[in-house]
Image (cartoon, rainbow, N blue to C red; front, top):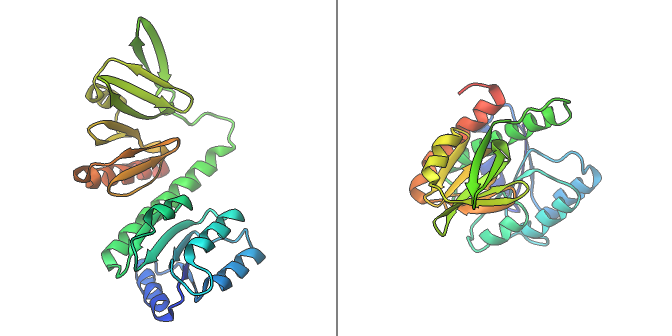
Length: 251
């Protein structure tokens, strides 16, 4: 694993490097003491982006948010984790596709938790890339049927991104359309199985389409849903089990 750290405080860089090293003994870790140096390096070798970047926001000369936008503009798809003393940038962080946002001082436990989530996402992305060019279908071909106004519609389960309850109806949001019908979300949850999780009483999400999440919201391909705080731990457990199941074929 290739991990970069960028903070204009060398002591913090050293602290983070030491903490990351205790989590990943064999990782390649590179520290940058200002955003300009990292940006110059990135421009020279844009295809050599690290797997994970731990980035401070408030730095002299160029700030972390500006640097993140520049890195995204040259194609860096690195998993971006902001580490800062201020919580005011959380929504702006999502604009540059940040994976997570940690406020200093960061505890060892929280840092390890976020890095392990990032590692799981990396594994998922590599798994999906492995099968992207194959000539066979690896998706779930299972289908369900729903009825609305006398019309029966057959839907491929793997195409369902999420479902929600709205005006006493269940609305299925798929990769191509939204379909509503009278029914109960609990019945749909039971029918769809382990690859789906209910993070909130009004939503049911397909774990396949999760991009990122925190304790209050889940970002999906094509939308976002609320996370009930009491369901956060259960969601993380279900998502990690899904990653393990899809990558290794085991629970």
